[in-house]
Length: 204
Image 1: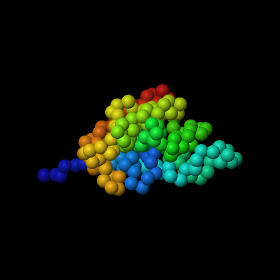
Image 2: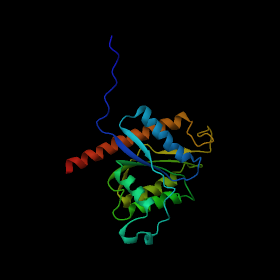
Image 3: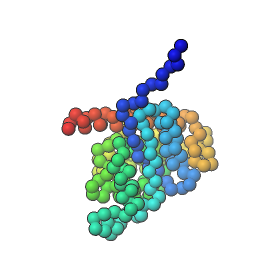
Image 4: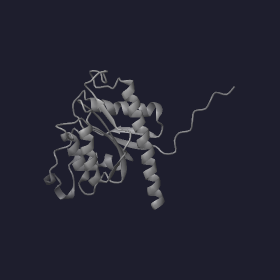
């Protein structure tokens, strides 16, 4: 009897530029991105998570745009954003709002020409008692101007410091219920991104 054949690879592989708004070594939000990448490898064919590091970006300063160009770290970041099919943001809530590193990255990507426009995005957040909800809603506001199309559901607000334990000491996600929430959100992002691409292809 012949061995069962593996399912064919998906026709479209979406590359997801994933950005953590926390620079901390054991960040739970960076841990959410690692978990998302693992989930895609194991159970969501056609979706590839590429973690985009923003720790080397300088603070936004248009004086650095000498001769119409950008500093090397900014150029490299913008290239990764431009080449992505969609985006995944994971960010803590700082003082009821967006973390400074993420806002800085959003602003660098928005410098003309805007690198973010006309693609789908999803958000995760791990934070205190609200799970980062206020941060997510502020990111949505910024996304309106940047022409980022966020999925509306599901929303994933991870209350990082409340039981049951969500992360280990290295920031790795260990809670099975949160992993399932992340998986459902990634499936929604995949479906919405493919739908946007289909509409774009029909319009060209």
